[in-house]
Length: 331
Image 1 (cartoon, rainbow, N blue to C red):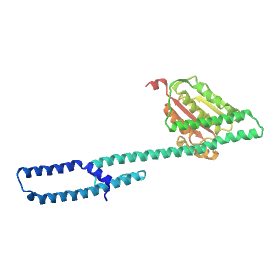
Image 2: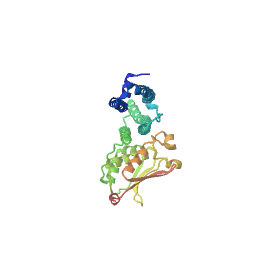
Image 3: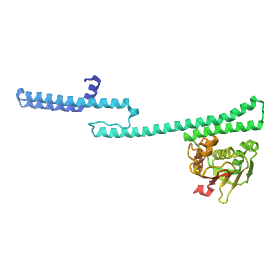
Image 4: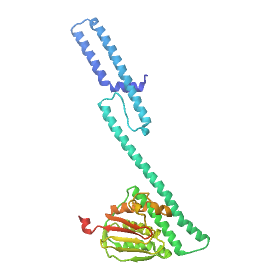
């Protein structure tokens, strides 16, 4: 029951009360001495008050010890606590408990967010590893069989490079470490650079490119606009085996990227920009990670670019990008 350290802490906490009680007794004895009151007159009540104070102090110490033990137990199990409750608390304890419970609530929220991020990263990397192994296996097979098709090898290397860029961008997105540098940018210049990266895929799959130059400048970040173009072109080529990919501006001044691929089911259109959503065709062809369009949408939001998708299964998929004018950016 008695703990030396705990008792010392209790006495320190009650130091003011102890000094007050001793002061009262000192004043009492001064009056006894000054007025020549016989000591026998006050001895009995003095002993009774001493006993009473000790009994009250003992009960108070027991409650103090129980509270300390409760706090120690909470500290040992803090990771599993949803809220902290202590009986027989004063107003200061209530304030402290409110602070602790708010901190616990925020801690649970952050832990939950962290666990979700870890889960998302693990899920994505599982898919990413499968995706990147495909071009690597293709390259190894060609080398083993001495089928040195340089065009196909260059295409496989580009796919690997694209997947690596995608995962690096995903990590930056996840950690919110994106620096944007807005300046006037030639849309055609960025689009041509993206098309050049995928030129081998156009040739290998014999897909025709119908590209109408826009000669437009927009206020944007070149690097991340290039990321958006790369991802949209990669998707168009991934799900198009024959026909044409068209790039043009429509009557609403939207930049359109239209392919003649397998299309997207109507039921999947509204969920295309959700993280991890692959849709029916993505699952059927096992080509989708559910991350690319999610990242495109988030980046378009950061660049103040509107993005929308229209599609008809087995006919076409049309992606529209709506840029703000320079005047709208100023506003």
